[in-house]
Image (cartoon, rainbow, N blue to C red):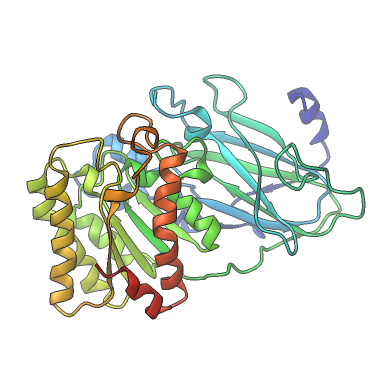
Length: 372
């Protein structure tokens, strides 16, 4: 549908802001307290945080908004904060796009489209959300009948901040809170640009969001491009968050093996002292065979933290080895030899899904399979 036609269509429709009930937003812990889409407010950042780090903290990776409605049509309007043309290795959809999914009764969650700023170099988004279709555009439209209630899920951009976001619905339709998620427990991921989502082709395809959607659970994404340096202030901030599982994956942002050795175990210890009962998952780097010469040393440092924890009596720690994530697809799983493409993220997702599912369901017998 042409942009001018959409502008005419939304006249007289009901507009709902994503921070307005009955929408429910997960992944942005300060969104209701401060009415901002930012992941981490500036005053919560480590005192030595650079201006770039503070900017990255405003980006919305992990933010997911959900609502139920029976509207026969939906339009979306949004505004991202910055033009992100400098990220040469990421698509515009991956940097600044919004992904739309619907879930009808008795059906799985289905991706139905993505939208980005409609002018190159712009920041405004206005689009139709194709809710009359059951999935991608090659599928049959839904029959014309009184629309049944369905859930709309909007995945926010992974590498941009959001200033405004609305949907437009029929004036007489139902708008309801979404159904409770399958798992109420929240997973917190701490790590690098890969954890944040570089270089997924769209926001739902990074491994963290993929896990959130497929496990149907809330997540917090504390992946910070180039800036996850295991500061003790960050460990303390993470320890204060509502989380039930902690995935620790900042290897990439340690400038060298010596730095990783100095910071990895102390970071774990700070979180563990504050959160003695939650599972902690140690993850090693995914691009094992394509970058850096000290990957064997780095892997052993992370494994040593795991073994140290076990020796101290911690039986709620898990070690996931990224060394084999890209086995068989080494030359095709990254954009630049480091950051995964969608194939690379699929491999990470598949490696983590069984363990996290078992932990969410408190299936300790299954989870013990991941003890090396």
